[in-house]
Length: 389
Image 1: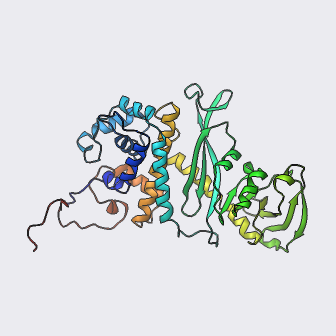
Image 2 (image 1 turned 90 degrees about the vertical axis):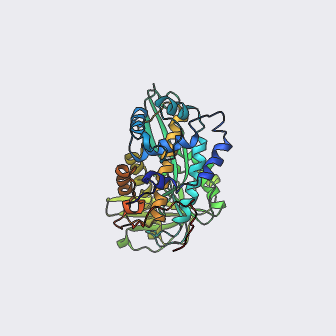
Image 3 (image 1 turned 180 degrees about the horizontal axis):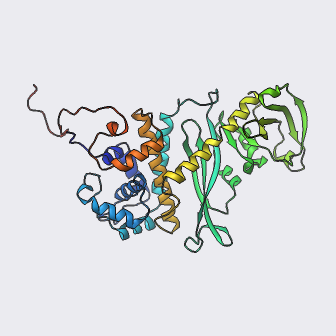
């Protein structure tokens, strides 16, 4: 019989708790806190994500039903709806944002050699945003339209392993292209974007930094063709041109050469036009890179369906951002566990299994695989061995 930790505690052991407390100290999150620490808050919110709790009352009810297991889950403070609501309202959301960045760094190291659908060695990022609708009367700070509130989750996704590299949460009125100002282009990497990110002055900065971009062109682009490469239309590539911009403003904002590729997608029966500053890769490879951009759409769909970021436990900006960042940290935790334990299951399947076994006393590897974990008896690592048999 297994007599060790419950599944939830085993999962939390994968988190760098020391780094978490450094984030808490940076923003003085536990100052004048007597019983319910930031770590307790994180554990409760992470439990809510893993078990699909819908409200603070839902969390409180479940925690009280598990009262005799809270200590073994690592939660030392008393759980109540008002206490958790106050913590989400007042404790700086940047604590959890900084901690998520630490987990991003850990996950990136684990997935650095993950196979990619396009045969290139460089890192490929997809940049996009998703809109989360909110009720303007309940969330008056989330400006979007006259009678509608919303927030945007701007994400830079590393397509090797679908690890979010950069996340910025803004109100719905912030245009996507403004996020380019907050990115530090990584030399040699590819940034794949849709038409919303066409702003040639910002794209020229990517070019000067030695980074490559692949962006879908607008239909009203003014340009002059310099040369054309031979193409095979059977592959879907209709043209491969080197161009310069001729617009009064665009020619000044991007004075260098660009590459224009026209591609017909037989699956969707649509024609796409791409712009890139990479003059060396084949036109078909560029088209395949843009096709991989749909991984970020799947990422947004996944977290909206399987994490609690559409119904919020609080209405303040701090509470909403706290919940989103803890949801992202939970996603990263599951991704790290999947890689460390070499589990072949999808993230969706892992979350479904954990949701019904989270308080069981079983080895987490046995829970997530068919392997039988043989336990020769309970061993307390703090107990010295007096006799060696």
